[in-house]
Length: 321
Ligand code: APR
Image 1 (tube, rainbow, N blue to C red):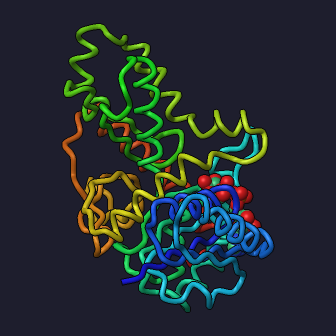
Image 2 (cartoon, helix red, strand yellow):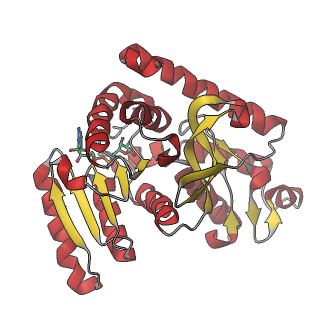
C-alpha cells in the first residue's frame, strides 16, 4: 500500500525531514506544507531533482493548501518559530500556540486518521495543545524530543569514553527543557552499565555531571553556534525514526512526549517517557523503575511542564477543558 507523509512546516527541519524520508524510501508521497508557499514548492522541487542522482521514486509536492494533506498516513509538524540566541524554548509559547491552533484545525478537517508527530517547541505544551485543539486520539498524537535528547547524551558519552555511539543505549525522560532527565542507570555502553563504568573510574562523577548538563543545554549550544535558527539534522532524524516505527509496525521502544493517564503517577499531561510505537500509534507506555534521584528529577521536570501548561491556559483558556 502506498504511503503518504505530510510535513507541516517546510523550514530547516521540514526540508531535512523530506530529504531523509525520500532517501529512506519511507513514503511514496511527500507533501511539504508551509505558509511560505514558495519555500515549500522550492524545496519539494529541489529534492525531487535530486532523485535522479540518489535513485528514489517519491512524489514531492509543495503547497499552502490543507486539502493536499488528505489521506496522509503520517504528519510531522515543525510549523512555528525557532529560538534565537539567548531564548529558551518556553519563550516561543505565545507565537507557536497560535500557529498550532491553525495546524490542528487543518489536520482535523483533512487528515484526522493520521499518526501525528509534533516537533514544534516548547514541545510538551505544543503537543498537548495540538491534541486538544485537534481532538485526535491521544495515542495518535505524540511529540519528538526524547530520541533527540538521548542521542545527544549518547554522543557526548561516546566522545568522552572513545566508544562508538552505536554501542551505547540510553534514555532521557521528562520534559524537553532544562529539567530533562538523562538516566545513567538505564545507560548501557558496550554491554556494561554506566554505573559499573563509573566504578571503574573510566569516567568521573564530575565528567558525567557535565555531560548531563551539556545534554540539557544541547539545543541552546547549537542555537548559539548557528546564530540564526536552531538544530535541524538531529531533530529530523529523530522524527523519522518515530514515523518509521509506526509505518512499518516495528514496535520500537522510543522515548517520546506521550500522553500520561496515571503512568509514572502523572495524569492528563504530555511528558517524555519510553513508549512502544507500532501500527496503532503509541501502543504502550513503558514504566521504568526509577531510583530516588531519577524519580525526584522526573518530578521536578513534570512540575516545570505543568507550570508552562498553566501559562498556556492563561493565553488560551479553552486549553483547560
Ligand atoms: N502554518 C504553516 N507553516 C508555518 C506557520 C503556519 N501557521 N507559521 C510558520 N510556519 C513555517 C514557517 O514559514 C517556516 O518555514 O514554519 C517553518 C519553520 O521553519 P524554521 O523557521 O526553519 O524552523 P525549524 O528550525 O524548522 O524549527 C521549527 O521546531 O524544533 C522546533 O524550536 C523549533 O519550534 C521550532 C520548530
